[in-house]
Every structure is written in structure tokens, then in C-alpha cells.
Length: 352
Image (cartoon, rainbow, N blue to C red; front, top):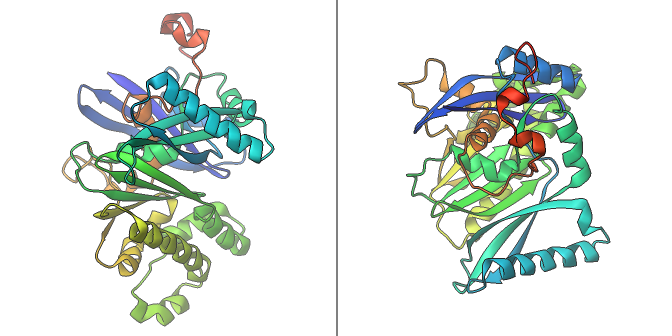
């Protein structure tokens, strides 16, 4: 059985989920959301509460950038890599930055406009940011540092044949398009739950209270728009951000060369009641629903499925840590310590 603790870390909160996998059976062992002032102390608390002293930890990449390059499908692997590297070097030169300051990975996918070409989804992140994150986990074993815009698709079923758009409204919003079970596009918006929580925090002086207010807020249909603003003053802090996000999603769906069958919603903002109905009103004929991890159903779940959905990003990262998802997107470089067996890296008391 393999196990991984997924930690989705933002400026004010951590979402965590410990996932185990045995053969094809996947189970969420423990999960939750914590707001923090001191990150290292909160990480230690989560590790202790979930008994994850020896468990490999998977965390999210920060401030990653996505670029898209076309390469001819007949090129061999080495030549493709050279072309992609050259394209990225050109972007760095045009922007006056040193390419050596970035760690990069890429995912190859089909090019809808030209069947003789392959599209590379290129992901880059600052090496200094990665080193800082790695340093925060020096006492633990990091298995993966992965971009959430790619990892979030781990929540979809391998049997799902529908073309989908996943809208993950965390601090920032990632919009991931999946066609024929392949990720073909990831877009990042600065607008997201950070903006919503900050707006409410400015009035309530508490991010935790802002989060609880979001969970208690309900969006009604347009017919009751005047009434809902009277009943919940904080909707004025919520709705402008959601309006901008749904507008971008509608453009992506309308401009897609492939028919999109469904829009999934996930992330912190999905704690707001009826957010799926709000998106449905704007996207009309495309079905909109909250993204549920493919391995969890109402019969198996002993608790409310909405509680799982609250930590979807952490579950997606944990799945990456147990071998699910796209290979080759791990920004964690393997060290000598990673190659050692557990008994050689375990201290007295069972901690690493």
C-alpha cells in the first residue's frame, strides 16, 4: 500500500489530505483546512495529527508560468526537447530574464489546429521559490512538487470520455481544459478566492471568519438579486470576482475548437452555496457541477462529500504522490537521501 500526504499551501491557509492506495482502491484517510500564522508550526501540527512522520509529502508549485510551443510530431524525443528549450530561451531573452533561474517541465498533447504537430504545455518556476519551499520541509520527505493546474485533473475518472473544463478557484484561479482525456490547456487568472477573502477580511478582520462567511453565503438566481444583497452584505465582496471568472470561462468554452461537454468547479470558492447554479446560468447549455473525486461516492463516504470537495486540491496532490496522474511534472529533484531506504532515514521515535 502506498500513502501520500497532500498539502495545498496558500498565503493564509493549508488544505491537507492523506491518501492511501492499494491496487486500484484509493481512500482518503484524513483531511482538513487550517489557517496559519506560522507555517512551519502548522505543517508540524498537520504531520502529527495525520500520523504522517514517514509518509511522502506532495505539495503545490508556486507562481508557475505556462507557455505553449508547437513541435513537429515526427521529431525524436531529443530533438523535441531541444526545440522546446530553444523556444523557452527565446521567451526569457525577450523578457530580460536568465533562463538558468528557472526549473522547467513540459507535457505533450495534441494540436487541434495542425495534426502534423504536437503542442507542448511548458511549465516554468523560479528555482529560488522551489528551494524555499523545499527548505520548509527539510525535516520531512517530499515526494512531489507539482503544478496544481495539471494535478487537479487527477480527480477525473480514467473512464470519463467527456471533454471538460476544470475551474479551480483557489487564491488564484486555474482553468484546465481536458479533451479526449488529455490536458490541452491551462490558464491562470489572478482573480480567485484570495480576492474574495481579502475583501471580507477588510471588514471582519479575520480570514477564518471570512472563510466561514463564504460557507454560509448563498447565491440566488438573478430574479432575487436585489433581495440576496440585502440579506447578505458580503455578496458585494464575492460576486464581482465570480462574475469575472465566469466571463473568462465562457470565452474559453466558446473559443474552444473542441466541443466542451461539462464544466467542473472546485477550490475554496465552491464552499459558497449555489455557485454551480450561478455558473450554469451564464454557461447555458453546458452542464456545470462541483468536481467530486472520482473514487468517492455517496455510498462509500461516511461523511458529507462536500467536506472532501473542500480539500480537492490537496487530494489531487496526494494522488500525484501515490503515482496517479501525468508523470514527469514533478519539480522535486531526487536527492541522495531520497534513494535511501526508510530505516536509514528514520530517527529514534519514528520521525525523519
